[in-house]
Image 1 (tube, helix red, strand yellow):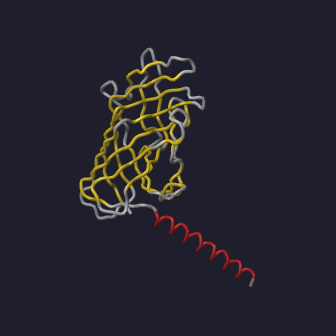
Image 2: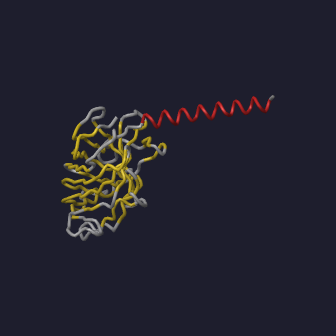
Image 3: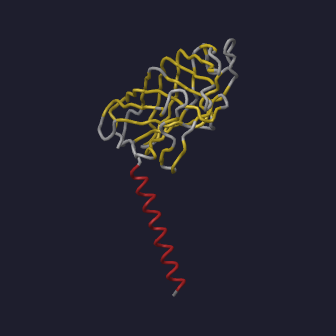
Length: 236
């Protein structure tokens, strides 16, 4: 009798956990399918990558704008590539004078000031905490977004990999439309702030979003991209 009762309690617990998992999965924002034309583009103004120590020393990469080309793969996933244009790096030091700005590019980019990412995977999710709609971007394979080439004097920054994951707010939701906004924001002061979204709930579970660049494990990215879809889509 005790064994049967214990089995019953375990079975009830499993059902309860399954219900919570199913409820969370159903609440994650998704593209309403079917979608025939799945392509999209996006454009931002200034994009800023900061790789600074707690004292504000380090490197700041600024690009005047970026362009994104992508495809909706399924109801919660996109593939995308990003071209950052007119990019420069500023070396922030303890003294009164910083080094730069100096033009910077990715290792395989054909022109100075151009940073090209590899293929990125974007997953729709729920921001933790708060529950707003978000999208998590990560390299489709491995952890490296892009390899930045070394720069010449006066900056002399080393070749470095930008790696990890980053998440932004997605808006608006709940209506059929051709456009959307993806906002990557930083809280606190611009020099020592933190990425606004550090965790996001996707179908695979709660995922931490963090960037590393120039050996700084708390790098941040700021940009606001305005996306345009080939046909009206709805995220709900």
